[in-house]
Image 1 (cartoon, rainbow, N blue to C red):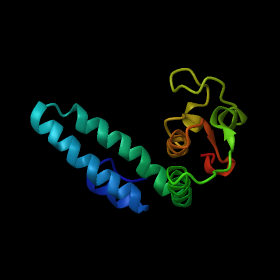
Image 2: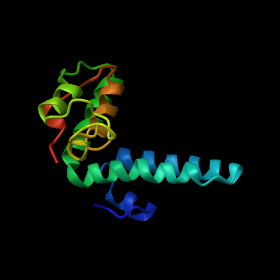
Image 3: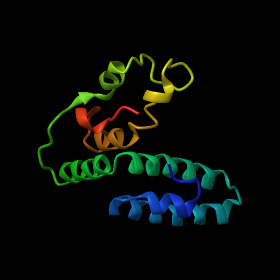
Length: 137
């Protein structure tokens, strides 16, 4: 897993779309911090992108598939539907899917490994993901 700092996070992002979004987001959050003098926004940015960087290290091909699928959706191309992410996580034994109450939150937290696939599903306008897109930890 990458260290939780800007340089390590950016280095771990293997997909060009991730690096571009990271760079644009970093510029925006630094502008926000300059105006507000509140580092909370920067801390939140680092945390969100660290999760994506961890996902990128764990499953770089999954990140590429997510961006390819999002590109298809944005281009108006047909996209195959998958299983709902709650069903995928439920198959791992998770019933509530929140870190505070899930008995297996370390393996199925939807803010963890499913983050990238949920983003693709959101871009697709649905709550479904490809079965192979969510890999067990």
